[in-house]
Length: 168
Length: 99
Image 1 (tube, rainbow over the protein chains, first blue to last red):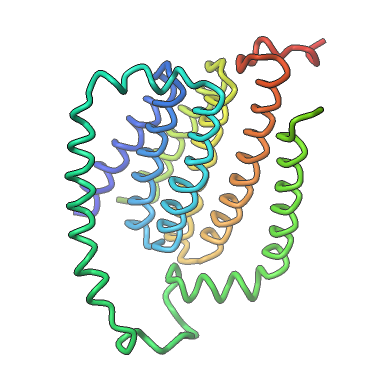
Image 2 (image 1 turned 180 degrees about the vertical axis):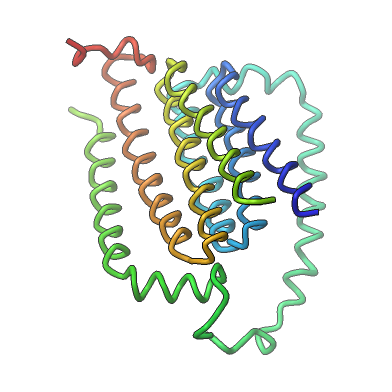
C-alpha cells in the first residue's frame, strides 16, 4: 500500500515537474509546480515527516507560489487572461465546490472542543519526525542557526524593498 | 518503498529542474525550475532522515525552505526591476554584464 502510494505520488510529482519545463506559459508552469510540491508533501507524509509536509503545503505551495503568481500576473498580464473568458460556466463549478467545501468545514469547526485538546507538551523521548522531537531539536541544538535565519530574512526584506522600489 | 526509490525520484526531479534552468529563457520560469531543484534536495534530506532514524535532516529541510523563501522574494524583486528597466523578462536580453 505504501509503495503503491509512493509510486502514485512520485509519478504525479515527476509528470508535474516535466510539465513545468514543457509548458510555454509561465503561469501554467507555476500551477504545475504547485501540483508537484503538493505531491512531494504527500511523499513527506509517507516518510514520517508530518511537520515538513504541513510546512511544504503552507509555506511552499501557499506563500512562495502565491508570490510567484502575483509577480507573473503583475509583469505578464496576457499570459493568464487568454483562456479565461471562453468558459464562463467554470464560475458555476467554482461556486458549487466552494459551497461544498464550506459545508464540509462547518461540522469540523463545530466539533472542536478546547477542553479535549491534549495537555502534555513535552515528551522527552519522542519518535524522530514527530513535531515534538523536531521542535526540541530545533530550539535546543539548532537555536543559533535559527536566530541567524531571522537576520537572513530581515536582510531579504530590506533588499526586496530597495530593489522593487520605484526609482524617481 | 526503500531509500533507493526516494533517491531516484529526487535525482529525476533534480535533473528535470536542471534541464529547465538551462533550457528556459524567461527569468521567472528559471526561478520555478530552481525551486524544483531545491525540492528534489529536500526529498533526499527527508528520505535520509527517515532511514538513518534522525531528525537532523528535517531541520535542514526547514532551513532550506527559509532560504528558498528569501531567494524567491529577492529574485522576484530583481525580475520586477529588470522588467521596469529593460521592458523584458528574457534572460538573453539582459546581457549588459556578459562581456
